[in-house]
Length: 168
Image (cartoon, rainbow, N blue to C red):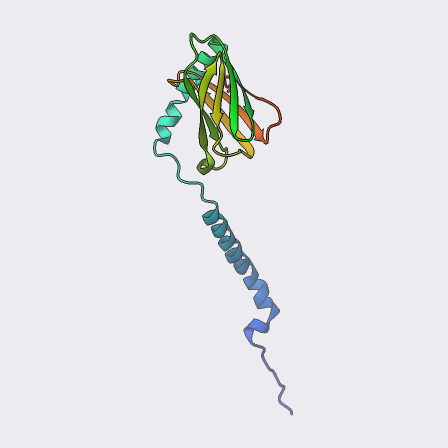
């Protein structure tokens, strides 16, 4: 009788081991990938006063209604380095300066504002700190934040962008 030769392969050469470990290995790879994406695309913390901002939404609706009552609207034209704005409505007088807020819908770190100076009538002019690209929420408030106009626009914009009271 000859003894049978039963050579065993090391565990890492057995296909069944790799089949058993593959879900765990895939999970680690996916987890590390998501961690890397999260670290590289950090968009900042939630505002500290988010509760107060949430409760202030009624005030935002009041601003929109006040802008509707005044029949306010604005037309914005973005040139290479300037913002030209025409404001119309039933205002007693046009404010000497207004601030146009450019808010990126996904990255608050990209938000910026443009101060526009009153020229004559309802015409305003301001300098662009940088040229916007892709989608932006554009907000214009009264000098004492008593009214608000809003638009969402994609850039580069070839036509004028019309700001109106929000219909939300």
